[in-house]
Amino acid sequence: MNGVQLLLIIFGGIAVSVVAHRRGVQPGLIVVVLAAAASFLPAVPRLELDPELILAVVVPPLLYSATRAASFSGFSQNLRPILTLGVTLVVLTTGAAGLVSSWLMPAIGLPAALLLGAVLAPPDTITTVSHGDELGIPRRVTAILTGESLVNDATALTLFGIAAAAAGSEETLFDNPFALFAYTAVVGVLIGMVFATAALLLRPRLRTPVLETSLALLLPFTAFLTAEQVHASGILAVVACAYLFSINTTLDPKFQYPSAYRTRLQEDAVWPVLDFLLETFVFAYIGLQLRFVIADLRHASAEPGLAITLIAAGVLLVTVILFRLFAVWMIFAWWDMRRRALERRLRDDPAFRARMHRRAGDRVERRRRRRARGTGEWQASGDWQAAGEWQGPLGAPTRRESLIVGWTGMRGILTLAAAAAIPPTLHNGAEFPGRDAIQAIALFVTLGTLLIQGTTISPLVRRLKIDTHGERERARQLLDRGQAIAADAISHDGPPNPAGFDAQRTAVVTAVMRGELDDDTARILVHDIDLRQAAETHLTREEHAE
Image (cartoon, rainbow, N blue to C red; front, side, top):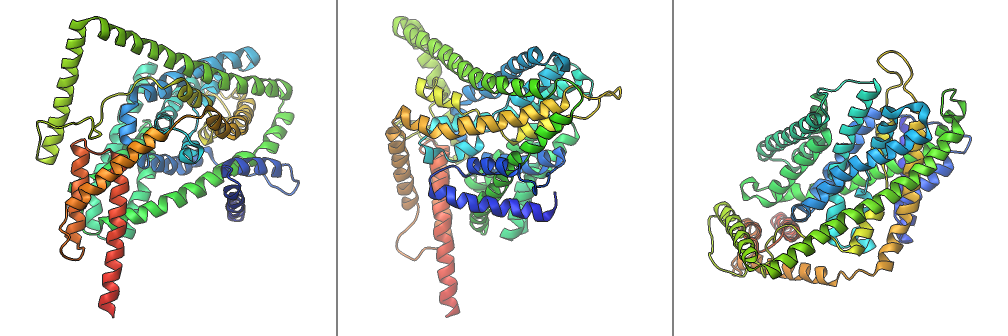
């Protein structure tokens, strides 16, 4: 791919996005459809990128941006469904898709079939949940899907490496898959935390928003590549780095300095632009591969052949869609049954009820004391639940929420990048069995899920008529409370000054540490304070210039 082709793709994506926004349609879906149709034009050349380049250049910034925009309180409250979907469901999907692939295409062998299962297993829901408010998706569902997307890629890539090793194409550090997964996860997270800590210490010393923003833009790439060099999870390294860096630069008073507000505003403007350009490129690249993948299958001499591959692609498309729906429904239904059994025991067994209430009270007390150590104060009384404090893990999603989670299973760039990363030969020099078929199926399933699920998720949400009035009202109440806290932190006698803005931010962060606000509300408030400080600074400079 040359520079002219890349620019044409991006400009075409911008034009399509303008029309899509005006008509209320997700731009990515229109881009992928038009790109797929354009691939059959005789003048359109084949666009080829090194799969390692896709993984190293496209995936890290998209993951980093999604993590920095994620709800950390929502992640912690929904940790159980996130890990269940991001780990357990990916493993189950890999097994189910692998067995179906082995049955449909026995010529490729079970290891290659399981590798195909790992390629198809992880959904990519970041683009969908980024439009969650527009689609009417409840915030809890958005938090679950976002968290799942941040975890499932690491699980799928680990399974991919295990299956590739079983097929004889590459070696892994550990023969034991559990040890391999533990190593990739732990080391990846540690590497991300190290880079985030180093950036937090370096950032105030740069003293220039442009340099500080440049540092933030380099973080996802350095964390990812470093982790991959030591065979750890680059995905988890990026997620850990983004989480630690963004939460501290926004909500930790220790990392505030005079020009920090300018850097935050600049980053808030830069990351959405980068997201749009990368997502536009990804969707266009997916669609433009269609004609050439079909041509490769026609000229392939090895099994399974074009007809069997197309049949397998259709069956696997239906399999991954229905299996996710069924698995999500069963997992959450089983969880709900356990919750109901616990509620019955709490109602019927006084001794058990007293013991559970005592444990819950102890947990709340420990949490409040930890927060008190971080804020330097502690109140022994107060209506913490009314104040909006984090109230522990939430129960199972409702049936309507489960249906939305189950249907939001579109595959994306990681599926294509993993399929393209399959080596052409094995260690013994033989061709990798079914490589062309695996890459074609990955493309067909990705396009199919985007067109089937991506175009119907919005009508599904509208049809379910989920009432989000309660969560919107709670968000408004928290915002009002936060604005009052920020207003009480300053004196209104004189003109606004930097010390007053710092006092407001500190008051908001302290309220989060004490459980009076959640991190989503605090980010909105801090952004508003940053904007007001930037406007006041600009007006002051103009007055001095006059």
